[in-house]
Image 1 (spheres, rainbow, N blue to C red):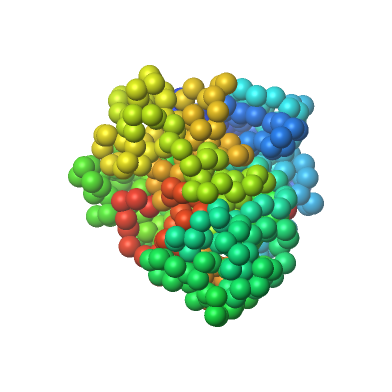
Image 2: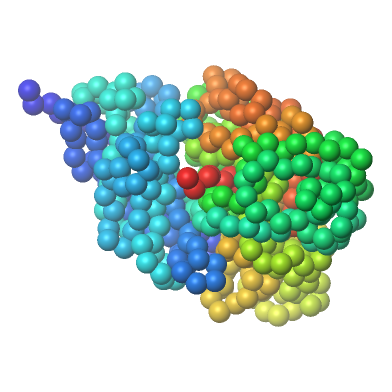
Length: 495
């Protein structure tokens, strides 16, 4: 029997600044429908700026994490689409010859594809475009009928691939609980994902300078040891990390596509920041970001975990944070994300001008010069600055000039705090790296109910990193409140 499908496409791509990521999804359509196997091929064009792939030095690439939301017409009850997944390769999806696509599955139901990573097939650098990408949505597995009238929304987030390999944690300093090998004062080499002994003085143990000067001390030190299980993500295995902090536009898209009951606890009076401006205007099933190109801040751990769950991502561990910054290089005392202990701006400050996608920073060295937004380096407002602002003119510039990590991840020192899962609390050592499944509880909380599934609503065991990458002053921050300096950045295991 001939059947007609009426599809209303609501495109909500996660756009950011022209000088930042500028990831775009355009021309969304249905290429075909297979009613015998109940799937659609969703077609779109994908592009973003400042892309790369290299087989030397870093040997990594950037990528787009793409996922799909859908709703039956007029229900406004958006759900996460189950993308076709068989073995993690192309899985029935189609991309141009200059692209690679890999499906990432659901941790709980390994037959379900939560999203796809799309990236360059060969080495190259510069803006990238992948026209006519097609991804297979198994709508029958989601309970959608052949004749249902639906709306779909395609989302994309820029990611950076961090390859498998050993790396050091700790920087040789011991003033704020930095990691070390036993009580040697030397950085500790993470060489596998095997279980580790925390604390003590044995050089084979991951210790912490006796937990000195920490805001909330670890539950291990030179005299007390603990075990960090094999399942805790240590950063040795490959993973993807968001290239930029979650923007206010991305968070607005999230608020738009959850129910009013879920939305209420994820928005509200916390949207009063230091300048008394409401970053997100929440309307009738549509949230509009007033500062779409800036990072989403003033969020709680419950907000962060909900957004990452909805996106099919997960939080990063504090060990992964150091790997994402330092890479495989030797540690440097007091180093920032760009690999040394020096600020780039010689006069100490820069100023901030413009608005929206045209926001720029200016220093004594000229326009678009600077590497981090901190209270000691920034003479403007205390608000976070545009996502990717320091990559504004990255070509032929050094890491110190742009603030980039070894792998090319931006704003890991400065701007918003990076909230991470600590090794120093028994509540979070069972964190096993499970990913979000795209859904939330009806209350708006992350959908996971077990503690080890990382929905630590109270924030106990959640820490922060921000400036010097090995300083662990706030590794056991334990703050469940919305704070002006909190940002959102997720990761996803590569296997």
